[in-house]
Amino acid sequence: MLRAALKSVALPPLSLFLLALLGLCLRRRRPRLGRALLASAACLLVLLTLPVVADTLLIGLQTHRALPETAPLQGAGGAGGVGAVVVLSAGLDRAGFEYGGPTVGPKTLLRLRYGAALSRRTGLPILTSGGILDPGTPPVAGLMESVLENEFGVDVRWVERQSRNTRENARFSAALLKADGISAVLLVTQAWHMPRAVLEFEATGLKVIPAPCGFTPELELELAAFVPSANALERSRWAIHEWLGQAWYALTR
Image (cartoon, rainbow, N blue to C red; front, side, top):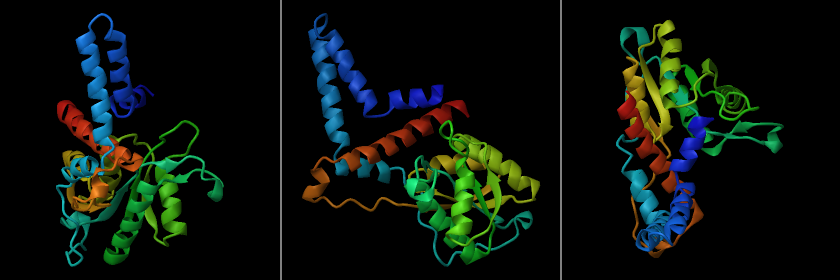
């Protein structure tokens, strides 16, 4: 609960509203500082709503290329080859009215689709990883298992239901895999999340082959790239979350 609250405070747009509020509070006592904080909050809010800024931030995180379709991926994990496809959770649809209850969110579904494709291509078993994100909702990994088996027709061998963040994804998944003698995995997550995920999984001793999905394409400097949008603000939030996450994990590793 505390982690979620701190995350909300640190990320836009709440962080920018708080900065503006601080500027308003200081406007009488220290007018220059107050005006500077207000102007900074307004400018940052506008910048983060621009597609050109959001995409630049995300592209800077995409340090791993897409997995070549012809890459040799088969092999037994115990023999040093790849032994599993690991798909990380990214969120859920809390209501899921059309499905009769909570289900996976859009970013998680994107990862599942690619994980299913890799499993079919390689014959490797799948591990889903993701715990309870919100009180009263089931672990995301179980929802992922249901979608993979019932909608994609792919069996899931391991379901890791305890993790609450990327570091725990890695730690708890590694424990399940190593118990079955698996030492190397294909790791599926968004391209902008992959750098942090790889670091955490490799820290457990697993060999990781990044299998990123959901790439942000190269920038096209057209008029639309400079028109503010709510979608761009959301993408900026994802990017800032990752940059802050990388810094925090580096400090606490």
